[in-house]
Length: 369
Image (cartoon, rainbow, N blue to C red; front, side, top):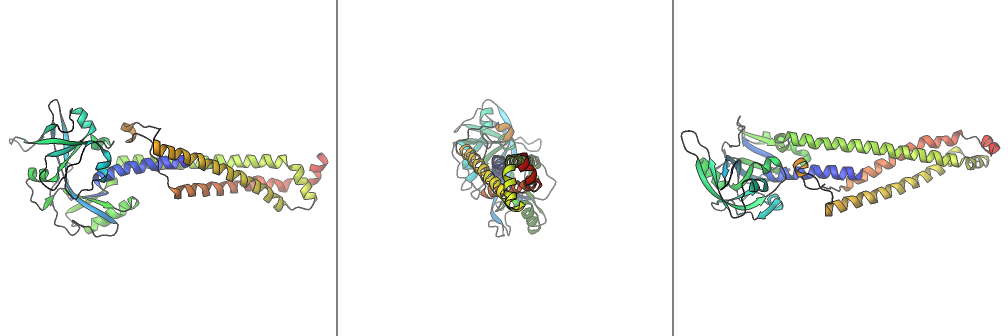
């Protein structure tokens, strides 16, 4: 049960962290029917920007996206340029960098880009190489062309990001779209508690102007989060099965102990011991067995979790699970809950076989012996 909870919640948090690190918890954009990668401009002159002074919200950053075709010497691929500025949180990007470094975006015009490891292999690009990107315009206008230098290569493990996005300077998109300096493609908002993302998203919708839309990460990535929710069901099923197995095992163990001690029970009853006092003897014996099993279960379960957490000896297919190894999340509150639940379940299960004591007649037992 400990391993099931640690791996299940670990995978959920790892994938959530990847999505949050790249897009934030909530995205604010222009309220329209546009479903393309091209942002309609919004004004950055807002009450909530550059500081979002609302309870539960920790950070806000501007961004913009623009679709185009990235071409190297040998190949080309349709991609989305995500423009970021100097207010962008770089912690996550730093953690997924494979090669190179993150340029100082937003301070001055920058021709550097970050591309994914997938795109780097597809286009045979490496750090320091130059690539052209073509941005389409309405016919008969020819596409605009920009030369970019690959400053770094990242890998998130998320197909939707690695196959589609490159990261560049926000100013590049602003100039390409001929936006004013007070305009951006949208905002990415971070909150303090992922479990309250729906609540925070609804609250933010009422706080921002009517022409803006606040969309949560869960709504933008419904399929991924539906898949993650299945892990909760798997964890519940495993816990229920394990509790039933543990309870049945303890019931059988106590039945065997009582049947092996029927003569002792008869003697104790002959000497005046009550059914309750005799039941307590067997329940105390069963409690020792439960604690022994729980100690061993905690020891081996936590040992496995810590070994996997620090050494990662069990690997996963990244194309299927978005991670390269089984992630572990050791939550002591969950572990305490598992132990308490198992103990209570087993103790309740002990009540049934302990009733057998009351049905043992000393006359029959001693006469038979």
